Length: 423
View 1 (cartoon, helix red, strand yellow):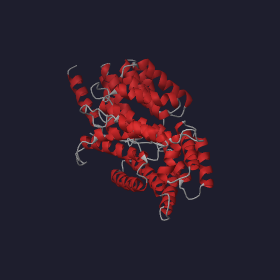
View 2: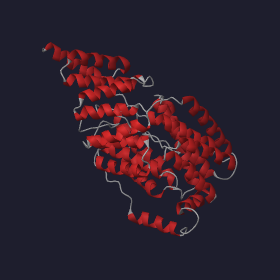
View 3: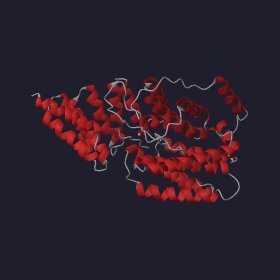
View 4: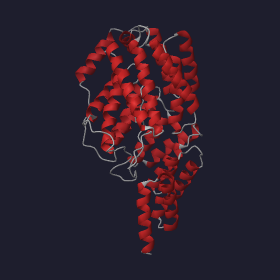
């Protein structure tokens, strides 16, 4: 099985404005199988609970009460104290990142540029640009802003490493550095540069550790830990190449839940991370709750809406899934990935002609890479297979095998040969 973990690790992989990488898992197995779905491991894991003790949540709410009635949200003052920053900076940084979540990318770029001029040496300007370019690529699952991303990443890393040579703000600087490294780890994973991805990931974990030492009351860092603990376990379940370090999925889920409740900057990425986690766990009702919560606050989030559409599809709420996907196609006409998911939806729904047309619309984009093109041809082959159009099914499976050596395409080719022999 070829493991595919785009930043659809994120790591799973993408924090849309998150300063810590979140990859979005794409199905490693035949995602039409109702007992598996689009999972990285291709397995149904044991049941996990995942909950945060109410006493801990109550204690945190009590801590925030001391800041009630001030100019900014109480969480701003908590973050400022934890990171040794001014409330004004934390508030403005949160507002800039919020524009990312709202998908106002031009507004976010302008806000990050303003922060860079106003707060020199904080590393926020280039880091913000990294977030913008990566989010745009993640939405479309492509690399069309590669050069812009690379320039911003190199500048952000240099600025943060220089800033860390000066005393003060170590918690904040290591937090940003961990985010840049985590995002680049996922970016490398998408390029199938696995060794580089692992090295970046471990560098990010080191920066997270240093952030914790400098700012022990800053809970956002636990998103990196939670994602790593959960998805490292899942990846180890999927590949013999990754050493098994024990099942840390439960711990990872609880850490993501903690961030969702107590983070300064990363509440939406934590919710998105949990949505992908519940998909992997086969807990589609929980995934629906997470994605619906994000949709209510950020209705134009392409990434979350694609996830929500998938969840509705798994729950066989086909009309709802179609509605969501068509909305995305209407307000983001250049998004190619939505056509792939429409193809998948119509396949499950039994609407063969619409499925075929959607896959064709997806394949018409020249930015689709060979692997994803092969997956689309595989599903087109399945459509023909179900109609017993053996010659056409064989043609598409051969294309899938030629492009990316998909083992499942090879297996279907063998079946087609058997069918043709049997008349």
